[in-house]
Length: 171
Image 1: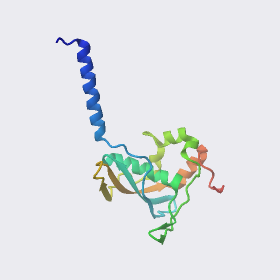
Image 2: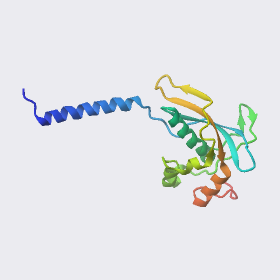
Image 3: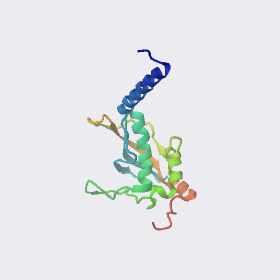
Image 4: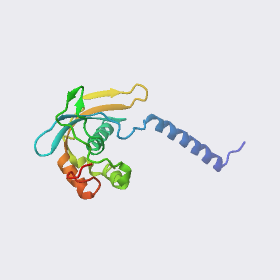
């Protein structure tokens, strides 16, 4: 049987598709905004708050990026719990908005995107993780970091953009 160029093309295309699906199977799809957040301290009077936050990923860089997004996301959309481990938390914070992300989806997509400004509000970005958990099933990684988040400037900038209500207005 003589093969034609089109048969070669079909065989190559099938092989490429199979290789692509195998390679994609090696990388775990990481859910966004699933994290543990805990306030460590109020920081100083300049609006910095120290937070312990987790980030999931396939490697340390991805975990770090997701933890930074999660740290900012926690203050905007979830807040910090009043009680942790049964103890009163003096640095508890209400979330900055009750509106879902979908209310200003295009803004949040850009804000939390690859070149987004979420990282502008975090200092100590290169702190090493203090805890590591490897998921035995899918081999994903969860790392825990401590970051300083400038919540005063974050709030001011988001109010100016009109995506959260003013702190002077009750949520």
